[in-house]
Image 1: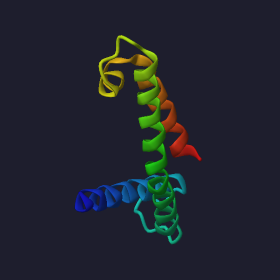
Image 2 (image 1 turned 45 degrees about the vertical axis):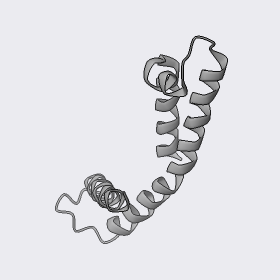
Image 3 (image 1 turned 90 degrees about the horizontal axis):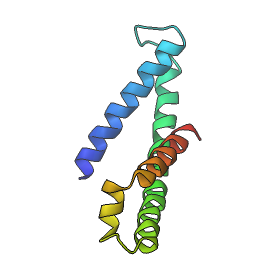
Image 4 (image 1 turned 180 degrees about the vertical axis):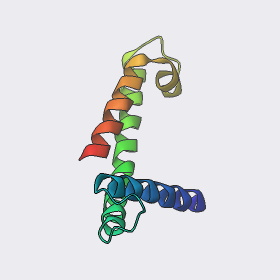
Length: 97
């Protein structure tokens, strides 16, 4: 799992760097400040993920406990449009802070 996360972090960092370089007009990727900025942005994002996961788990549990027809928290995750909306919102807000 750790190797997968390391790989995902490297891919994400590279994509963030490319976006930053594109934004500053340096399309060949030789920006002096973009790699450091990409590292910082990626690290900040990854540090937020455990908290976002915790909030989403609490949301799914609350939906399960509030609906007598629900059979499990997993059902609320996969079948409830409201949970999908909350997940999307939490994901977007974790990316922009």
